[in-house]
Length: 338
Image (cartoon, rainbow, N blue to C red):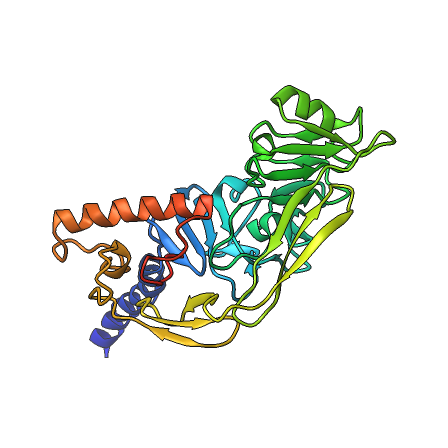
């Protein structure tokens, strides 16, 4: 009995140590990976280790497809997502409006554009808001984009204007970042004496007055037809007047395919539902484009030779340029590049 009394405290100590070790082991197992790219929806991000725990280090958002809206969550990996972590330079959104939760503490959405919570800073404008809906063969990337009323700051990389674009600056704007994208516009419209005129003069961009001395200046705007919907082309003035509108009838080949599986070999048109399937491992078209043979999965050591890796890098770089300029959306054989 005395021996049992001596052994019991020792057994209890061992048991308690084992019980305490389990949570510690589990915590170590749940430690996130740092400084590696993590994918979550349309986001790619890295985490960094701090004294207070994991923190977001680098965040990118890219959505080239039409489908559902571009949802910006409140957190990534359980960490709050802020405008400082997701500036316009880290966002590519082509065809869908942004969406945030009503109780998001840092972001809001005005007319489809992503803004700060107070609605005073423009962060990112979806491309379709500037160029209109486009399908197969839009001849220009231009149009008229009006900065929403109430915006005070047009932030860096918030919109992508071209020399065929007129940007209308509302009277509420008091600052336009020199790298906002407005500086690339073909014209800037606004009230004389306001920030619009000052910025236009400073950057050598033609200014269109919307005041008492206003005279119509016409820009070509266009919404391409799809496989089931009419399109329209017209001449429009920054003041809102339109003329010479022409309806573009639907075209059977103007599909907008989105992939339906992770291999990027099965697609479905978002307009009419037509399905399209291709072999991701071969090039049955014979056109020779890398889009038919590129491995869309992550590069794994030992599975691909150096030449294949380099070809993949070159193609992805070209794909980024094509997306930024809105060109080469379709391969010569009809397959969609993006």
